[in-house]
Length: 86
Image (cartoon, rainbow, N blue to C red):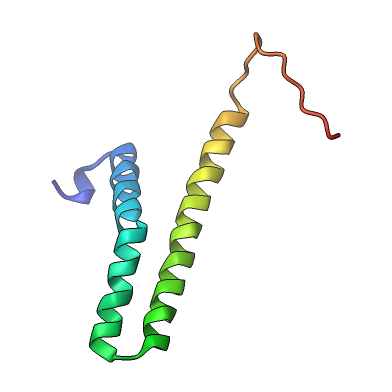
């Protein structure tokens, strides 16, 4: 099925799965070692690792912020919990 035939929710779920698989630590390490093998340059390989790690954290942060936004509109009337600083 092409993306033009998907609903918005299906496309978002598919993209989330793709991002999570791309930015898994195992895959980021594999990309680093592939770069090291191809270039024989540790600086380039480590740059690839750092860049992909940073992009992965941005993806996860966006997902967390979206979840927080959704949860902020949910009311829990039976839970009367207050958090106070020391």
